[in-house]
Amino acid sequence: VVRLVESGGGSVQAGGSLRLSCEASKEVTDYKDNYIAWFRQPPTKEREGIATIYTRGTSTYYSDSVRGRFTISQDAAKTTIWLQMDSVNPDDTGMYYCAAGQSGRWSRWAPLDPLSYTDWGQGTQVTVSS
Image (cartoon, rainbow, N blue to C red; front, side):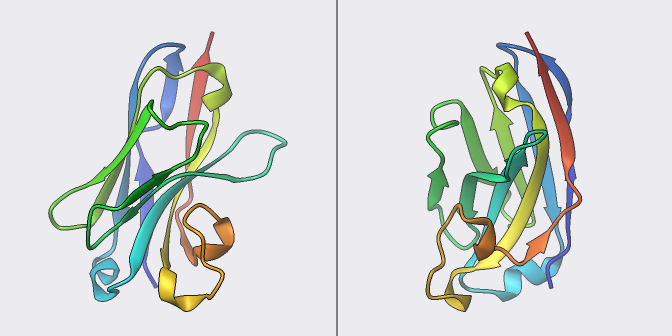
């Protein structure tokens, strides 16, 4: 089990920037096929996968809704994962979660599918005002 804690959420005006952090427990380094992803869930909407990173390499995936505006990255220890959010707009409002999952656990694993991730943080709220 990987424990995850998000931070960095808050209120920002449209066009601004925000950086979210996800602190993962050291167990994340036990897995050779581990990915850490960021999801978000606006009020009354389904959870959406927006970015993921392979913790033992540099592979990243982004949803169309954030590609070119958001950047996922990690520190050298692979236990802090950041989501740099630039040029935000009100549609980016929601609860942001980080999650850990191993690609070898499920034959239908997909990088931005919530079903591909087994460990979740509690979330951090992001509110973008126009």
